[in-house]
Image (cartoon, rainbow, N blue to C red):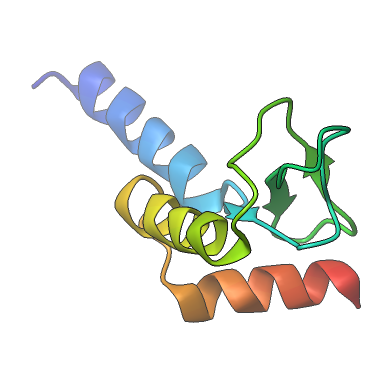
Length: 91
């Protein structure tokens, strides 16, 4: 790997390391017009949340499990980490 390629790789790694984490979150009161649970995205260090345009059905426990699974499997974030990110967004 050339010196320039190493520098580029290092820059990419630094960006990734410093990017705020984001998590999926569901609340039984954030619903679509048809009454389905609509997940939101919470970003570390930001107050509030970002709505999504999709729904995860009407069963809250199933939607909560889906958020937990996606946070861990896709984003590498444990439930404890997700809870902290969400908690700080509401403080």
